[in-house]
Length: 388
Image (cartoon, rainbow, N blue to C red; front, top):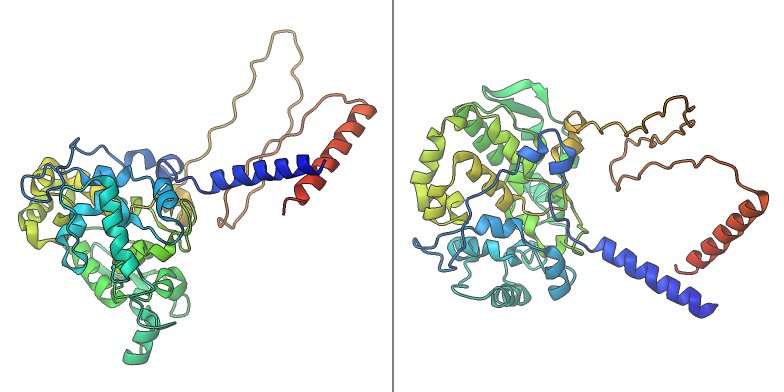
């Protein structure tokens, strides 16, 4: 009996581990949000050469999109991997000076080992514990101490295509910090002042007539590389802080009236090496992309993690309405079987995974059968309780 209970516990624990540590195959907004399936349009097919030069055909965004964090977690372990370990990030690592890494012509395994070697030495940009100012010296504390102002004051009022709009109330001075908790978690130099982020995006919105900025996206854009801290990745599917999905930045760009004309996109491509955005893909691939494809690729690089909160998490009106459950066709001259309710209980707290509806089985059960079922359930419950 003890062996049977042990075997059952091992099996259940194993199933829980598999379920808990499997990385999602796609972003949640694709299925959950209105038009979510249209947010991730196809990118040009291409195979990178890993030379990171002008002749490199590119295709690193697609590699980022297909990166399997389950394999990274199995290979490197808890808190020892980040999106930077994905091969799609290699072009950016090679060209961006703050964390320049030469991995030309390396295999995938060699690339992971090279990045992992940097992180182990502590100087790796995404080793946030090593790069912290000191314990509890987060950006919001530093700004308060040195400038004697609230870190989040600039975000109290939002902006639209005409600039700052006093009618758009994002938060109060007391609640703005809760709008962007990631700042409190990552005390490193990869976080920008909210005032500078606000100013640059306000200018961008007025220049391109963009109306879709949200405080959640502004938070994400001010965090920069901090969202890739290794400390944030507890397992393949568990995070210390769950970030927004890339549909936020794609929806924002779709709200820009002047971007869809393509003129701004041509200007960004012309800036080439001067623009950090160009460091995600080589020039040949940049030329092959349309404006919309570029903003999808940009979203993948900025918010690569598929364990994320979609737009509808914060704005429920954008959530798809579930399709009605199919009904059995009635047979002529045959009375229909009474239906039981399968409506799930609703919850206003979206912190955990949604639970499916429970159905009541109708029919006649003998008292002996009911007793056997009851005893079976009791025994199973006692066996499961011993697994903890």
